[in-house]
Image 1 (tube, rainbow, N blue to C red):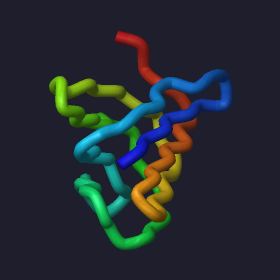
Image 2: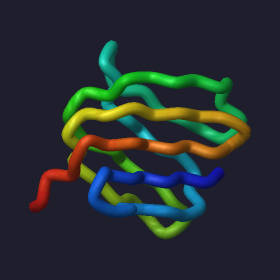
Image 3: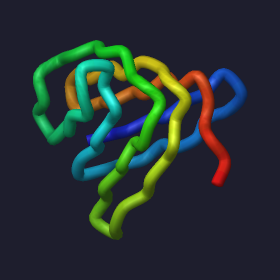
Image 4: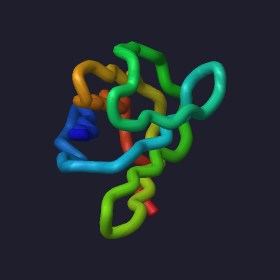
Length: 82
């Protein structure tokens, strides 16, 4: 499965993943391989990216997620810096 996280300023992440958890408006949800196509708005919160090597966490400021054919695209309004 392929994930891309983009903000208006820059690309943040692009790579192969095993799963991702996003902060949906109606609650957080996880996307696994072969997930049904979906478009959802996102609240501000944590995007947890899981790869074969571990986890990465990005704190986003709202946005939209699209899942289609094992491609996940997160269009975030911004990223909170640690």
